[in-house]
Image (cartoon, rainbow, N blue to C red; front, side, top):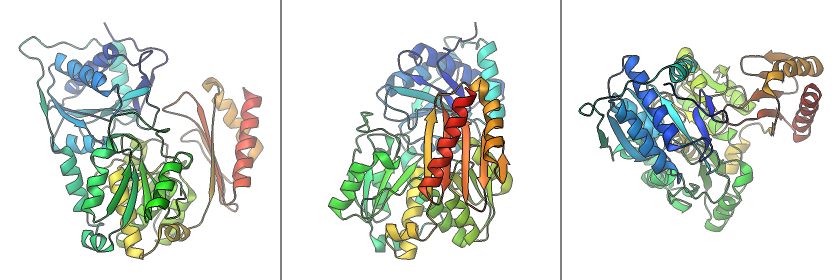
Length: 461
């Protein structure tokens, strides 16, 4: 009979996500993996499925469940081990695979885990494919293979080597110049999968690396989301070591945060801005980002006479729009950079290489690189709010706040052009909350927008 998913399991375009124990059990994961493998076959994809995972302590358990589920429906599996999520997607392309599964809950705390589902395009499932798979999961009982037709499991230990090699060969990266600059880089991998790639990549770029938390054991020493509030230890390492820059990644290594040479966190939005500047300097063209990304990315695009297009939040939404627009670079303001010359996936190692290239090209310090562009204050808040009342809330926000521009493609985004300010209200795809994000040239105005929006939501609820 079809698999029944627990009510508290989060199922969205981002995959299947929940807390270990109550929702994420090996029995459940084996069932989801079996359904995914069978669905891929039904869609006409007969190759192997790639599996990789981050370092979470639940990863080995859920990874074995994924292998069992896929084998049970006759699908061969190539296990790439503990690797960054973008490495998994590159492996799908390398092996011409039917798809892939990343066992990772990205930035969520250690008690969470998830399956990120990857298509034969080496991209995450888009909205249509995700909906089709969820319908299959809800209505179909996957046909199981006979004893002599079970899937086989092989290992691929070279996935990280290929990922590093591809970055070093990118036309935007001047390896010789970086080696001459010999930047000192402080690194925090939060005991995630970054430890298997980031030190090696940085050393190959000629950097002197001082690092903390590179052991990929899943015992996160802090909140694993690489936001400014969580980077005090990295800031201290930068100051103590005299580093030129501090880099922090999340557990599955698709997001990069920056700390300047004084140990001051710079925020995740600057990652995409600096990376985009490197790309646009040589190849001006469309830039795509999501509705919640800082205006500083728009400023960079304008400086290089390139259009900035906004898409709904979600990596695949940005990636699909990049394909449509022929974008030369894109990503999300959470530190996720997508470079089509490599693949249509957020990739922290690529982001790191591009940011270091910016510092090298400009012969500047990290604080000066940040000062090259306008400064904004961004304020974020998560609130519990009944999703069935969201449409009423959007109407109340629109009426009360009277913005110059409204965008309804992903929740509600209100913008005030003269103020260079905006507010975005949307339900989270990874947590059971509504996110409020506001930005303005000064923190007071951004906080005012958040406060007013919170009051309006309280009135509606």
